[in-house]
Image (cartoon, rainbow, N blue to C red; front, side, top):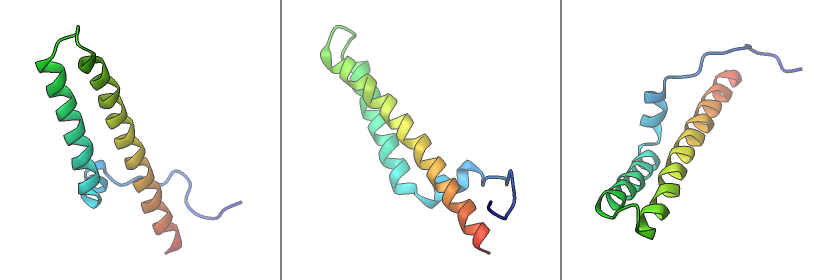
Length: 80
């Protein structure tokens, strides 16, 4: 078994986003471009439906990146 704290508090999301601003800005840019494509095309266009998975993927990748950064932050605290 590992020694250490159980149920350690994770750092705030804002701190994690600030650590890796470039990745999160690229995810946001992807989502904004996909939303713009969806607005300017219509639900009858294939570009609209291609943009939908791009938005979902951007959200999923952002959540996974936040989770990875928080785990790294907690692992760094355990070494101290």
